[in-house]
Amino acid sequence: MSEHFDARETRSPSERERDLYERLPALIATAVRAPGWRAHLGNIDPAAINSAAALARLPVMRKGGMPALQKEAPPFGGLLPDAAYSFGRLFTSPGPIYEPEGRQDDAWRAARGLFAAGFRLGDVVLNTFSYHLTPGGFILDSGARAVGCSVIPAGPGNTEQQLDLIEHLRPVAYTGTPDFLKILLDAGDQAGRPASSIRRAVVSGAAFPPSLQAEIRDRGIDAYQIYATADLGCIAYETPARSGMVVNEDVLLEIVRPGTGEPVAPGEVGEVVVTSFDHHHPWIRLALGDLSAVMPGASPCGRTNTRIRGWMGRADQTTKVKGMFVRPEQVADVGRRHGELGRLRLVVSRSGETDVMTLKAESRSHDPALATAVGETLRAVTKLGGAVELVAPDSLPNDGKVIDDARSYG
Image (cartoon, rainbow, N blue to C red; front, side, top):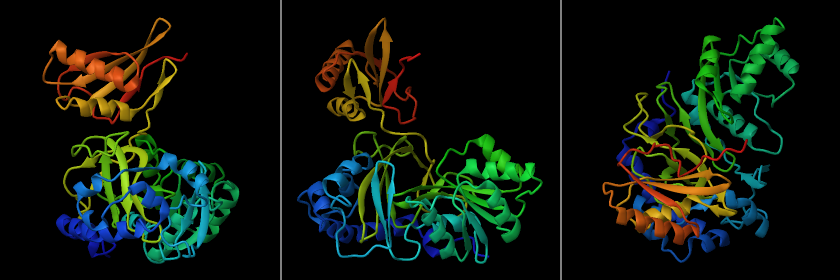
């Protein structure tokens, strides 16, 4: 039995990189046919966007801005190059953000993640992601059927009826949130109807802490995580190596400093930005607001694409200080104006009944004049005064946090 979905998963990283960047200009040329992308990207030459450095110079498109953009230019923010193209299904997710589904098989590219988790031709899969309005159920459903599985479109809830389905149809695999998998297993045990046919699972949409991972494993189920969104489908997936998540094929993933589009150093935690190669609905540097980091080297499972550490929190750390918003991009702006600084962290706290800011800045110099200059820049950028503390290089945590709100709200 093959360990890999196809040969693309094991090609050399240089071959994959060359393939993606050779295809990128055509994707950009397609995107700028759409008025929304043309306005966002400006007057660019698509043929010149053929490298990581060139891509990094393009502005990011923030997922958090999609509701306003789509409201201004319904239904999809003017981001579809071919308005005459007929999509198969249309969805909504919280925001609201509206998403179309392509007509091609496995439109959300989930098959690779399911195959890596051991899903195979002929398996019966209990899919408990919602099929109602949001695309979650269809993302996993279409991926499982592309692998050759038979899918039970169960959706969430209705635990007793789900136990009837499990008892009668004997699914060997589960897709859904990890929480609902535990609910099903507990309900089956309590009713004397254990869901013992389920031996594999792909979970997403909620935290899967080590304690729950251990409990699911002890109950005889080999469970894997995938990282997917309603806009892009499957972005990365866990493999039998259990060593990070492998980025999906046909996806260019960057990790940038939160609040900016600037790529961080390898291994540093930052915001996930994705470019996907769907010419009917292209995404160019979509900033997802999630934190992660690239891991060094290739996965021991033999897949050679970039690995990330999975979901590590949210990048949007905007907070209010003395009634004014302070944003991660403002902290990044301070860093840009003082190139001798390393990582920055703005700590917001209280002194008596007053908000106070302290900018911790990694620096090899501890010259008070530098601290004074950085403080002046902080005031110029945020319109708020704050202390500056110069700290040793590499002394701040590598967790992607740019603003630390340490105030107690009782």
